[in-house]
Amino acid sequence: MDIGIFEQYESNVRGYIRSFPTIFTTAKNSTIMDDKGKTYIDFFGGAGSLNYGHNDPAVKAALIEYIQNDGITNALDKATKAKHDFIVAFQETILKPRDMEYKIQFVGPTGTNAVETALKLARKVKERSNVIAFTNAYHGHTLGALAVTGNEFYHDNYYGVPLNVNKLPYDNYFDQGMDSMDMLSHYLGDASSGFDLPAAVIVETIQGEGGINIASVKWLQKLSKLCQEKDILLVIDDIQVGNGRTGDFFSFERAGIKPDIITLSKSIGTGLPMSIVLMRPEIDQWEPGEHTGTFRGNSLAFIAGATALERWKTDNFSKEIRAKGEKVGAAFRKLQEQHPNYIVDARGLGMIWGLESETEGFCGEVSHQAFERGLLMETAGAGDQVLKFLAPLTISEKELDEGLKLLEESVKAAVEKFDKEAA
Ligand SMILES: Cc1ncc(COP(=O)(O)O)c(C=O)c1O
Image (cartoon, rainbow, N blue to C red; front, side, top):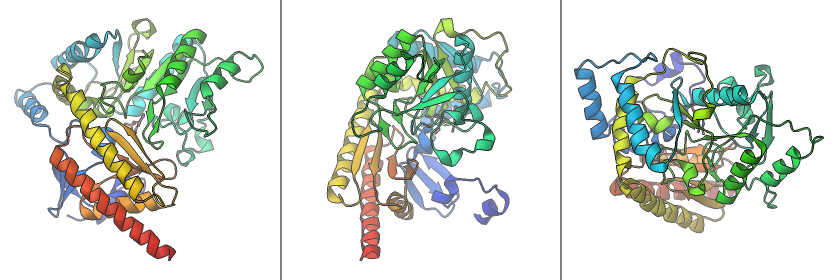
């Protein structure tokens, strides 16, 4: 196969092919193969859409059976058995055991559609246009979602997106310990602060694309309390760190808070496009068909998603995620200890981890070295200053150990290269 085809015919906007310049063909759990027969350990996990791994055997069997029985595969937003079974599985396995009463809205197939929907619904329900978002936030690339996304690389004033959004510092954005929840509370109590009462606050409990920034439980609880006191809807964007990434199914469970609206996508369909918005029942103020579209019922994603939810019937999966996460954390901290000149921080929770460098280009070089050695890993943060671990949660101990070994070698190679260049 000719990789030049992509350069010749695909738009310049293509992204991941630049970090991983090969043609992938097959994959199993956390191992992915290219057209040359080279295998890679996948620490990238489809940008968080492969929490249940590539081609999980139970998911694969359910999909094959569904297709062979001529199940509906058209993705129009109508009532189907596949959608019925997904709703039942989600209610029974995820929501009810957590005492969460939420309605489900199926939206366009990608994460940004869920964010767009959540913002629109919040504005409609509260009849206010202002929304609060945070530094380094990442919520997607349609215009509403872009307006609440931080990174200036994705912005352009021609898009007109900064309208009706106030940005605040995320938890620990400033080293001096300034608490943006105290700041928000003060602003909202001052009629002259220039801060209009917002319809909603949209937040990630851990900023994935923004560089693995972890909001503290205290900060999240303060945010939740403030939203309740001021009649502001709390939207948690759990697109990247939900679906078990932190060890709990929802990332906000660790803070014991109940958001008004939740966005979920990526792994909810096991990597097949699906996106949902969960809302407290009283917030469901849509008129029938008021916010709709053609592809809001991806049956194959429903079948796959319902099958994957089986894992949540006991707490074994959570325990497994936490145990593997501890191993990754220990390896990351060791790398920081070994290379303090290049790695200034190792941080994470559950199965999302990052290594931060203040040396420009260092994380990109590690990612490149890793690719050469057969390991897929991406960078995060506005300056690509964080190397991000986002392997499938189902990764085997063997794959994890192999991948961590390759990472160690890749970091070492990048350090040697940078040291040599500096000498
Ligand atoms: C937290 C968060 N929200 C929204 C999105 C946008 O999702 P999508 O790329 O599927 O539109 C992403 C994607 O990385 C994300 O991490």
